Image (cartoon, rainbow, N blue to C red; front, side, top):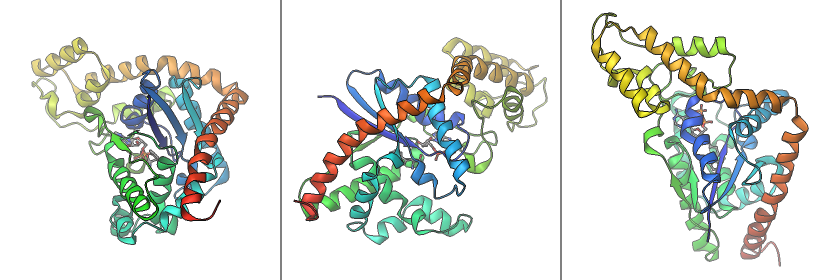
Amino acid sequence: MKKRVLSGVQPTGAIHLGNYLGAIKQHIEMQDNPDFECFIFIADLHALTTVRDAKKLKGLTLDVALTYLSLGLDPKKAIFFKQSDIAEHCELAWILSCVTPFGLLERAHAWKDAVEKNKKEKTVGLFTYPALMAADILIYKPNLVPVGKDQKQHVEITRDIATSFNSHFGNTLTLPEDFIKEDVAVVPGTDGQKMSKSYGNTIDIFAPEAILKKQVMGIVTDSTPVEDPKDPSKCHVFTLYKLLANKDEIADLESKYKKGCFGYGEAKKILLAKILEIFAPARKKRIELEGNLSYVNSVLQEGASRAKKVASETLDEVRKKIGTRG
Ligand code: ADP
Ligand code: TRP
């Protein structure tokens, strides 16, 4: 029996190196593993907790679709779709919210953060975000949910909600496991904090070269003089390079740091060249796909019809258990 894998990414901003290394890369690699059956979706309804502009949401959704397809997602191998195309997620989210203790969602990091920092608008949608995420997951009964470390709690909440549903209505929903690759669990941004759209510290893999260069050259470093030896383990440039380069390249850069007479500016140029080298094929493919949007849309439609089959089966089972159907 194949293990089912499911994950989603919100269309809330340009895709950055953290999204790629922490999530997207794993999603695409898993499609090639014959032991896995992959469902990958664009969480456009979740994005509504922050994006309130139809044109922008449409553009960002297309951006995520182009990102996955240009980085190698193969729609013949993985089921790739848009969350809002499967209305079943929302019905299940409501049903699950009725067996979700209020306190469980009050303890969610994203909600607590919004309350403490008072930065994000505290909507009901933001509060119930984990219940919709639980529905996204549970409706496909996956075994594994590959995500970055920041999403671990959401998968734990999903398990709690599934347990609550099963204890009220009988065993129906499968408890999923998170799948987190430790070495890329938290990719640092240009300021050393977690790379995140919301911190403005990203390296955007599809940005025009001039912007990419500005972002890489803007990585914060210490003030060790050029001629002095430097400690690579304390440098964000090196940390990022380690996530991208091969063993020999890493050893080479490490020795340059340790020898001295090597400035951070040079290290940044080496990192930039590596990023451009790695993403060159995807950047090229993306331009091709931008000229063939009808193909991109047909992939999402086909993905939606395959996903809908699975989602509606689970929802029917749930409806019978709760007494709204048959
Ligand atoms: P952001 O923090 O920029 O808003 P998202 O929350 O949309 O990013 O994250 C999309 C996916 O990318 C999630 O699975 C998340 O765990 C992963 N991810 C985001 N930033 C990082 C990072 N800095 N390191 C590792 N994974 C990340
Ligand atoms: N909350 C996830 C994020 O911010 C996106 C997401 C929504 C998701 N539904 C999901 C991820 C279901 C995995 C499974 O990245």
